[in-house]
Length: 138
Image (tube, rainbow, N blue to C red; front, side, top):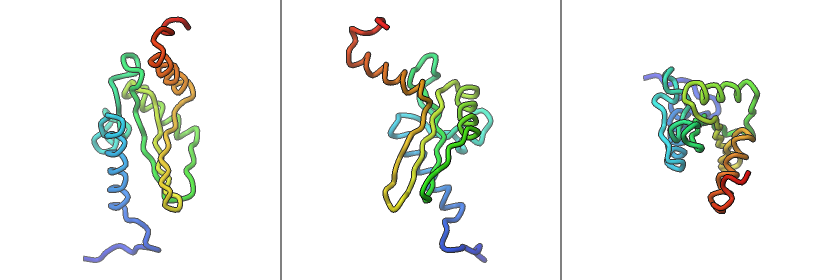
């Protein structure tokens, strides 16, 4: 069997896919969510990991798109965010989130990007959870 040329020991497509699947499983376990079949390639199951039911019934229902790089950074464009948002809201009825893994000099930064309004709502939920007497006073 002839193996494809591997320039400067870059990961193969199979290695990248394996690493992506591990990322998705790890996030699903941490969030209590589920991985999507085929990493969202199916028209009825978009995104990589989903949590909760939908944002109307569950304030913490998210659809995560997982990305990773061994480079020094990852660019989040309005086009990328709009694509993630549309998948989350229109297809799954969930809040959009982008989970990034940056492997910079073995630091392994794990970040989550969400809309500021979603973040403020989550903060409000946490504050009300800590102080139940304040519910309904806003």
